[in-house]
Length: 102
Image (cartoon, rainbow, N blue to C red; front, top):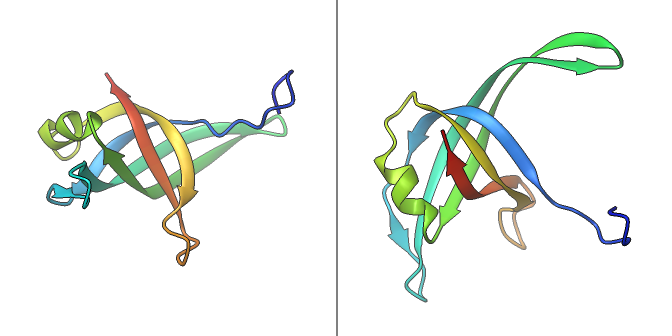
């Protein structure tokens, strides 16, 4: 929680683009692009270095779709966004990308 008592849902990841789907559109006309991101590196946990490798499902909606669509497979980028369930019926977590930078 923040100092004001509000919960925070922020997620940042430096990862490689592994694959991406084709752009689709919501009924409201919003562009949507799903992709798979790969992280491989080391993190510190309880004072010990730990190797971590993950692949994570991610989705971009709106303005970040163009940036993601133009990326080549294998490119390393900084991704920011939030985590949410895939849908009300599917409880798998999905990384919703709200910003992509080099």
